[in-house]
Image 1: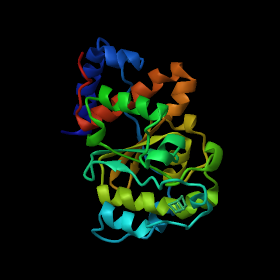
Image 2: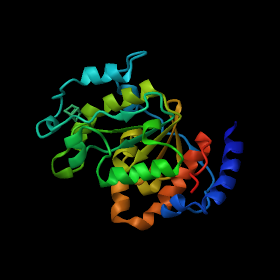
Image 3: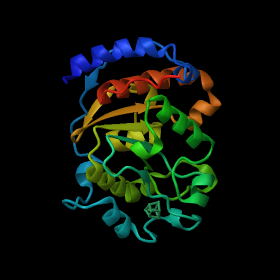
Length: 240
Ligand code: SF4
């Protein structure tokens, strides 16, 4: 199915979705068109990352080991590598583990994680269908943003994860992951909801679920972004 026909059929399915209670809870509205813009030229972290042909997620996890490559290892309880389908068509990339994730060793398991799970299920998927990971694998103290040097050290492992999975779609949750993968300092509101080509995958950025907990009205914008993802993946909104 080509992209244009996928987008068309999606627009119809989006209209039908307005009746869905799950979708409605996320503020469902008609989906906008699908602009596709290129990543700015120039070297990216992806190109700089060490890439080992045919390596698996298990290989990458083994390479990380009990990582002490940056200062974030000092306060962590558990390294949070990632979870989900190693052959997922859709990968969600967040910023870094929070308190609950640090304790459990799994990404997006706190309040924001529960909202992400609802978002995934509204897309007619299960958590185990997708892959979920973060830019940095250890919790920044006091939930601060990861520092640039920490991102520089840890993000090559994210890039290797993405290379191993080769998803159709990468959905960046929040500015940190989007700015890291797109090698930009622009605010997320400048490019949220736009499509980028990213090394064989399509990449879209949307707001982080933690932001939605603080700003529920933004859910409708996120739902529009997720509908674009669904159009590319040929998904229909979950029915009641
Ligand atoms: Fe290693 Fe990444 Fe943890 Fe830093 S954040 S210690 S680079 S796994």
